[in-house]
Image 1: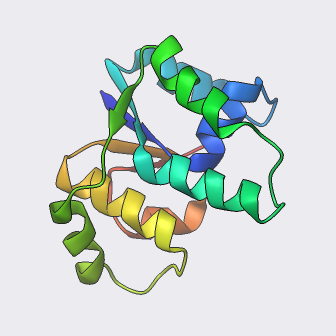
Image 2: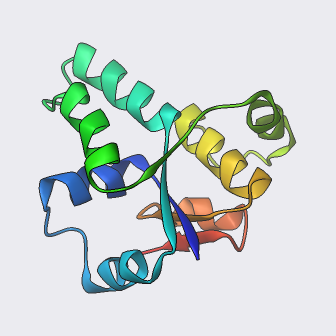
Image 3: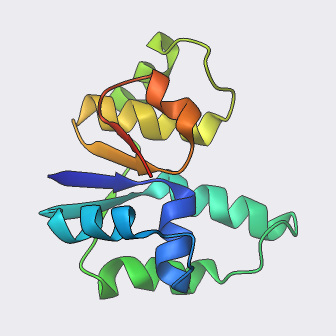
Length: 125
């Protein structure tokens, strides 16, 4: 299984947060490869700038490499897939992650149950 982590899952994993439950940990352990989208770092950086998050984006970028994760760049084929998605969800970063999961394909690990409406590739913990 190849996993793409949504922003919350990545932040919880990096912080050792207890919201990362046993099911999520098992899924992470079974993964052959784990991907972090560059859109996730972009979203985190925006939220840090707005004062909504107090994390170090530079440290999170290092976490990608330190944990052997793969960075998934945002490509035009990902961006155009967003236009095909139904209007179940309004967050542009989440929509891009779903589009990346569908396009690659990758399983998207998330805590947002609303994203499951998009694809069987969305794994909700």
